[in-house]
Image (cartoon, rainbow, N blue to C red):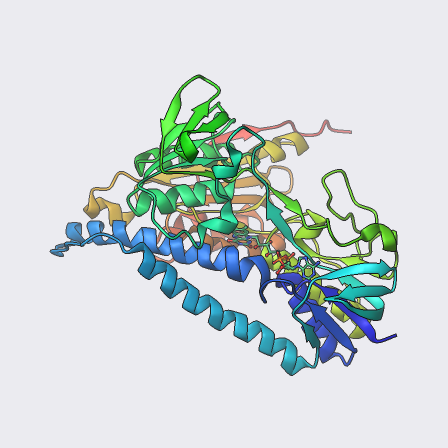
Length: 453
Ligand SMILES: Cc1cc2nc3c(=O)[nH]c(=O)nc-3n(C[C@H](O)[C@H](O)[C@H](O)COP(=O)(O)OP(=O)(O)OC[C@H]3O[C@@H](n4cnc5c(N)ncnc54)[C@H](O)[C@@H]3O)c2cc1C
């Protein structure tokens, strides 16, 4: 065989797996068809966060007036933002490629597909490998409505040549609400159209409601409980199911993602896929073919970069580092970079209530800075506690710095901290974070305690 391990896809999962495996001394090949670093670095987390930061600066400049600054701004230069972002991203691309090179992996800038269970076609070259990793990620999917070809998806938004004055974003997952914040913050008339009554299905209900309020407070025009039926007028009009139409410059579908499995010729290797094209895996990352593994978004489990990299690392250590382990998908913290942001770890109130009795602590308050800015923006913090064990089983926050605060709380929750431990922790004053250790009054009890034996 040419390689001990061949990795298809140079994104978060693939680069980590290839780099660590090569570091353990394995003969590793890795193919990337488009850009090193994958979705996160090029068309995901990283450029998205730069754009959110850009949008936040506008509000920060306005808010500074409340602190005595005489600030005037001349408007935002979209082309300058895109150029600055592109420069940083190409620097990161180089770093990813060098990391692989230095570790001793052989890199192929080419598309790979299966010829059989041990043989790949990599850009026309025939290569064999003892083990193969599929880490091909996913892609955005739009809606199948008339005129859909005029809409953009998240892949396109990072290279938009012109800033739209009016935009309709369809969807209410995290990507939709993040870009609603970006476009509204940079000055566009921003419409958000979604089927649910409140955005962010699957998140804690209090957080969802607080987010809807915050979006409206930022000037985003919300259209809940409806869906588009057509795009007309050369992409400039979005017709909704309720009969109304929105005249805009751009329609953006943020309606979901699907696994990149087409074109891999998985049938030739006998690798099975699920109903949406995703690749099911076992706890040790194996597909139904024992020497072929799948990692990250292509498995459609928890589509987050730190999960993908943790899986890549664990698989490389397991196969070549004599350190076998899996990756727990319990208590994985995550953030939504809306404005203000959301962060969460553990169970929502609704999930906890289904399990047993939970004690809920909620605090809503005006953050200190807005006492002077005059901006109407509230933070929400929430703890979900298992009544029987006193363990904190969920923490949720909407408010400035939520992701930075939640990372530390996630450690406490993974370690099994009780509410009594939170209460015994001294706060850092004056911060928003101290609220998490001073929540004393229970807001409500939910769920039912298991009946006594
Ligand atoms: C807009 C957006 C924002 C996001 N924000 C966040 C965030 O804030 N935080 C977070 O944790 N996650 C975020 N994510 C999710 C995160 O980007 C993914 O979870 C992560 O990139 C998954 O890594 P991966 O390695 O599985 O796939 P990817 O990073 O998608 O990498 C797969 C790679 O495989 C390559 N490839 C595909 N097919 C082939 C082939 N046949 N041959 C060779 N190469 C191939 C692709 O070109 C790609 O580079 C975001 C995603 C999007 C779209």
